[in-house]
Length: 129
Image 1 (spheres, rainbow, N blue to C red):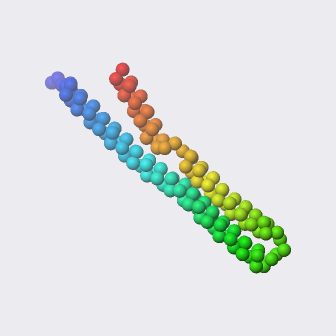
Image 2: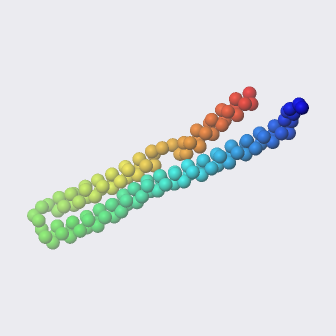
Image 3: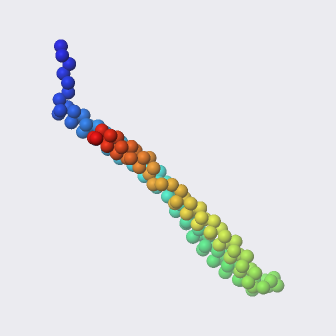
């Protein structure tokens, strides 16, 4: 009995099935990477929110320092109390902003999807040439 070779229709069906599987796999990978990106961005947003809270707290502390400096009269110049509290609070805010910026700029977006799409394009070019 002779082995029957697949016809052109069977080859096209197989190629379409392979293409569908490839697209499904790419979509699944993109979904996973998007979830990871969202989690990573949440940390950066939380750091910026922390910086905003630190600024608000800094303003409150600054006002408290004014009230205490006036009422208790440490004998220090008024600017010394303002300066110490302001420098410490804004230093914390700057540190939180730095952490937030590093989180946002840490990575390329969806690196696995980009890499596999490049590999797929190379594979397709090799098959079609």
